[in-house]
Structures are given as structure tokens and as C-alpha cells.
Image (tube, rainbow, N blue to C red; front, side):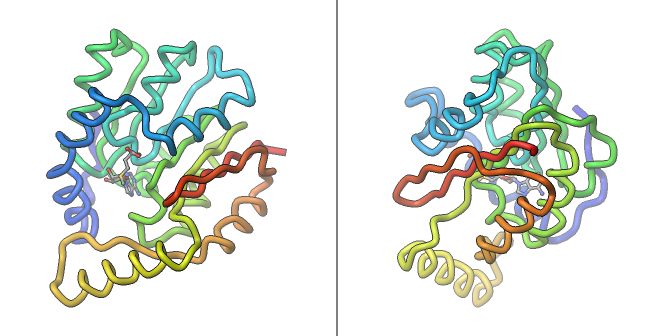
Length: 217
Ligand SMILES: C[S@@+](CC[C@H](N)C(=O)[O-])C[C@H]1O[C@@H](n2cnc3c(N)ncnc32)[C@H](O)[C@@H]1O
């Protein structure tokens, strides 16, 4: 497994937080399979053929999305995550599912690692954009790596979600949590993605998450 060596307090906090929950994510995937938001993401991704395609899964977690696409005919995937625990679980699943030859895992911050990665046909960021402070750089570097399909989910823009996130952020700052989520300007994010040359081809939502799938124009 390749590793990104430059960590800061923020990435160390993200690593510690998500590594602590990685076994829970794995248990959930093993017991229940894909979450609703993930089923929607893949529904959007599969508007185009996935056969033989290369995937970058940013903030891949335990690998649910790219492993599913590999089983269904995608060629190769690179899973990147700041959390060591998540990467360990994803590697275990890839072996169990017999697709380890098609997977590569990289530990670290995608924004720092982007230059060392090949372009992808499909890039996915499921529930990642609210875990990273510098959203503009994340969008800029990830869209630049994407040849065709760019799929992401972000917290739904409604009063309940905004209040929930802002409460977590305030508590996190007050109690100096190691990991604090982010509430970004999601309309600005959409504009930035469009400005990189992508058209929205699919949109859906759950109670908590908005799913957006774009195709390069
Ligand atoms: C809420 S979890 C979602 C995991 C997975 N996508 C899923 O939906 O099950 C967010 C993940 O994104 C990772 N992450 C956040 N920012 C990242 C970045 N810039 N580069 C790589 N991973 C990142 C975190 O470590 C965490 O595992």
C-alpha cells in the first residue's frame, strides 16, 4: 500500500476518527450491503457503461462502491483514504471478493497525492466533501483527474442537516475534537464542478444526502 507521508493535525484527526469507526462501516457493508445513497450513486454512474473502466474512489472507506463496480465489470480501481483503518478494511474486502488484482490502495490526502495518480474514467466521492476543509482544491484536483464520470454525495441543503452539521462544528470547536466536519457552500461547489467542464446527468437524494453525477462535456 502506498502512503502519503505529509500529515497535519487535520488529517491525523480524520485518520483517528474514521479508523475508530472502520470496523463498524465494514460490519454494516457485510450485513446490509450498499446504503441507499450508494445505490443512487451507482445508479447514476451506470448511466454510462462501466465495462473496462478505471475508477478513482476518493475517501473510499471500506471500498463498497468501487468493489461493487469491479464485480460488475469495471477494470481497475484506486481507493484513497486518509484513514488507515478504512484502507485495511477495504483491502480485506477486496481479497475476500477476489478482486485484489484489480485494486490499488493509497493511504493519504487525495489533494496531496493527486499528481502521483493516473487519470480515471470514473471518480467517486461519497460523503467526503463534508470531511475536508479545502473543498475548492479537492474539487479542482479531482475533476482534473476525471476523464468522464464524476460522482459525489454531499449533505442535503435543508434546515435539519445544516443545523445538525453546525451543531457538530460548534461542539467540535468548543471541545477541541480531533475531527470536525465542514458545512460548505454546496451551490458554489456545483458551479465549480460545472466550470471544470462537467454536465449534471443524474441527481437524487435521501433524507440526509444529495447525490450528483456529472459527465464531462
Ligand atoms: C464519511 S466517510 C465515507 C466513507 C465512504 N465513502 C462511505 O461512504 O462509506 C469519509 C471518508 O473520507 C475520507 N477522506 C476525507 N477527506 C479525504 C481526502 N482529502 N483524501 C482522502 N480521503 C479523505 C475520510 O478518511 C473518511 O474515511
